[in-house]
Image (cartoon, rainbow over all chains, first blue to last red; front, side):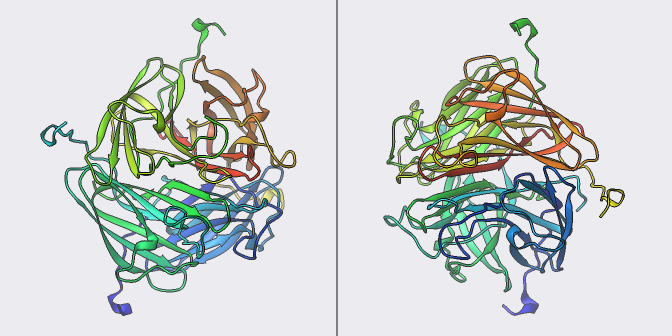
Length: 136
Length: 136
Length: 136
Length: 136
């Protein structure tokens, strides 16, 4: 299929998402980087335009930090590790946090964690909370 | 209960679903095929007609691939492994992807992964994201 | 608090739920019954009346089986193992299935599996799919 | 960023949430307190005011117990272990329960369990059930 024949996808998703659970385990077992303990947001943008995201991190005992600016290109998925966010500031390990993801286009967000603190992995995943009040 | 007495189920579900998280682990432990690492979409079609599905796979660095054509018969469930999709092209192992599932009838979709890269299994599961704007 | 002072809870939930994923692992490790591989529906009924449920099991290659009749008393939770359902027929082990849960009162349903086929447990859990079209 | 420059977040969430699944494993492996088996509600409050929560615990064979009073400060997240709730009464270990979370402000709730009964951890997580009928 050449680019001119590329299917156009109907919009899907919302512009605002929340993930109350967040925790980057401080230690890992197994080969790097696949088995490094990590906390991920998986984002899907089916539209024909790049989506510009702003992520805010909320903590238990300090003001929210952000925005972390991210781009998810048109018709692409990006699986973003919280471990890799460092501007305006890296997220401390071993601390509980939460996050808000805001986008200029509708996207879908799924939250996944690989916890490899012990010899065998544990995994969690859930579709994030969509703010259905956000206008599409 | 003979076929003539078969209960008729009220429609349930939506026609468009998204799963931002996708990853087929490249390796496995344990007996085949139950313990092969796999990524699954579980689809339920309670209607009296066969549902025709089109799955599109989104990647991080190339155009979406599809449609993968699937059929879920009337009053049946199908648990479809992404591992088994191969037309128009197999899904590479060890690569992050996302998916859109479109159906001509309302269905319900749940996403499950068995990760057996290490000796003990890890499992994730979540109801997929339903596009509630899709007309029933 | 004596019964006369018991708080009355506002209704919450829906009357129809679906779980596309279902699978009772055929084998287990660890002490019975806590570590027996099982597939569970957790139901919450906050109302002041008993909720009467009808569960239908869908398969890949045969007609749906049901209804399995269940009662969740007023202001109670019940965690029901698919393993224990046997009327009109037990659910075969090692076979993929799906389910529909219908109730005469609004309830909330969560789906959980403990998989103890290997030495260490794997767990999954997700809120089931609510049919928001079902009238409250 | 000084406090006067703090970003104001649009409201997000709902005032009433339910978690049908609840179970505090009676035993644990690994270092305390990170690896203690626990059942957690992660709450995010993005508003500029403190949120006041009332949690009710539902059981299989006795009346609901509550309210457990909790505060989630403005622009903060709190990850609350059911293990730590003790007023009006601690939650028994090894018993199935469910919960309702009511708040005077919109919040988002995610449910997570770490099960460390066996040598390796198992994790579950899901966004809780939001009562979308509750007025924002």
